[in-house]
Amino acid sequence: MALTAEDVLYVEEIISKKLDEREKIITIGRSDLNELKDAVKNLIISQDQLTIAQFQSEKRLDSLTVKMEELTDAQIKTERRLGELGSHIKGIGKSIGYMLENEAYRFLPQILNTKYGIEVKEKILRKGIEYSDGEEDEINIICKGKKNGEEIYVIGESRSRLDKRDIKDIINTAEKLKQLPEFKANKQFLLVVTHYAAPSVLRYAELKNIAVVQSYEF
Image (tube, rainbow, N blue to C red; front, side, top):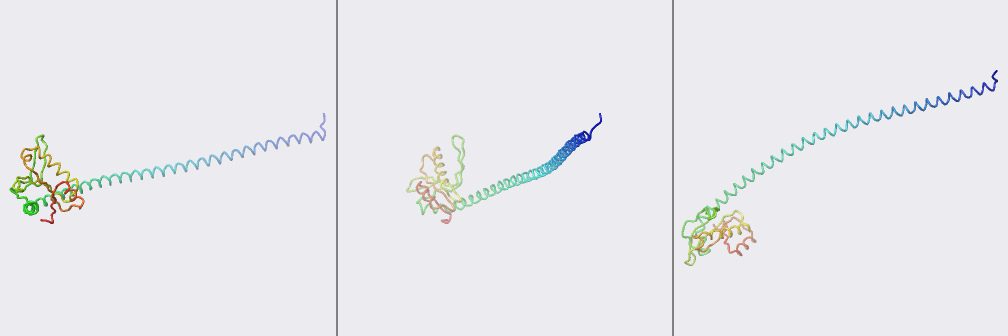
């Protein structure tokens, strides 16, 4: 059967539509492919940036670790120096304490006599004490004396700077000495020799019946 002109136009129209649809599909496919390529490219860039950021973080972490180690070393050195300084200061304090005691041995007999009416009957000295329980103590200043015709023990400590704790210490020491027969039988005169005592400490010592002799009195 022969095709008419209308049939030919119809066929051409169908073919044209099919070609247009195919072109659209191809165009859409290319567009999706381009978007996919862009997404992959962006992913690669993001991954590279993440790798760089991770590397920088690791570098900072290494730097921080080094600084922490340096800080630890510095702290150890500081603590060591403070320990050495503390020992040095303690040594100086002991030396000053011994110097103060030595001066006190020379001048206390006269001060005790004129200020407190105590006649020293033997040399003032530093003495080690051992108690019945095996505990040992050191008395900085100790000697026998007489006051109003009655025998008395002078018991004292020397402190560069006097505080209330030192007053309590000498009271405790005097109480422990009463465990020993020779001290139990005699009265005690308690005193502290010092370079300096604050007014509040002097009042506290007076309240506790502790005599305070300051080095300027020598």
